[in-house]
Image 1 (cartoon, helix red, strand yellow):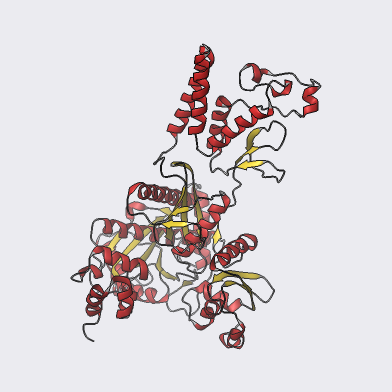
Image 2 (cartoon, rainbow, N blue to C red):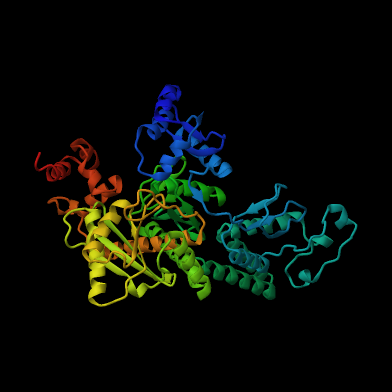
Length: 602
């Protein structure tokens, strides 16, 4: 659908809140989205020039649009999530989590059994969970078995069978793990009381169970039944020991959900901590693949809805790292500044960082775990696909970037024989370029890198990858010419979004097969230079090397600068704001200081 074609139908699109669905010519669902105003949101796809390659491709393939009007933004949010989960449209966020989770089931039967399962069947049974760890489920079941006598057999304990005396007690009865309901030695009421204690244990609410056991212990003591009292004392100690193994934050905190997020390129990683009665009951981290440059706020909101549904959370408070519009009216969103909730958020961030680093390590090991011959085959394939004159046993990749629209830095990573050679990695602080100029920065770092290698008589790479496309490739080639290195190595540009490969002087790009080993290797090299560059930024920030341009304005402190950057994402965008926009965000006095700083000439 072209912009002109859309203009003919734009007036028919309702202004109400709702969800919209884009279909291609074959009737395949491409994308589902939500909106406060359907007409405004859908129009934005057809009246803007989109920088993102996938967004442009989506718009090109839209053949017709369908709408569903709902009563509120909350209803639109829930319906959008339901449709994405059901149809998995190509251009929506892809959540890479196909795992089946373990549950503990209380079976719908006479004298219900309690056991582990992965299959949820609608048979009237109670399914408690899900849990993220099978090991934790087995540990809980062991605690339950030791402390709460329940049957483990699969006998049909109907009233008639028990009355007719069809069954005899087994070894579990003699060991004290069962009270013998099969012979009518335990009533339904007493068994149900045990099941209630099971539910309390599973919810992390151990206090009622411990108190009950203490009462029973004191009753045995009063009747001089000291052996039975000792058994209850051991059960109390067992529960207290189990409670101590859990990470307790603050028992007065109650039940909350904690979420943190890290974004890197087209992927985001979200960690979830489920807090029950002030104790960390579960933790889960998921990977999401962004399709249309979704913001962290959009990705996190989607992940929260998914994880709360999967883990059946009804907690009325969620803790997140930044302000978030979450449409469930009965849920409070908290961005903690300190205290126990801040500590929980920091713990969640540690978990998501560890998950991302572990995932990255495994990805790098894809080639590192292969034999020399297997790695050579990938390199030979890359040589054939790019028609390289020499086998690319030594590959280098460059990327330059800036922080919040300022302070350019760059990174170079080196792969030898298909695996990362970290001792050869290099960071660059841009020295000769004033302001933000990606092309000039690329020219500088390429010149410095190979001028140094020539001076030290070090071997040159067979393949150099410039991350950034035609513009940066042209700048890099200027330095290659100045150093008289034309023909000494192959230099290519890699477009950031399309994964297209450009050769100097060629008007047409090369697109390698999406799942080819060649492109997978190039992706690994590119992802590594991004990771290495981001790490450099973090190190610089932690050492105070970067001083935000906003903080250089007299009267503007770190907190105000951080607030503005969180809201508007970059200094460049803040420069374009009107004075009224700034007043709404930081007040009249500070708005005037910022406006005057950026508009001195005017």
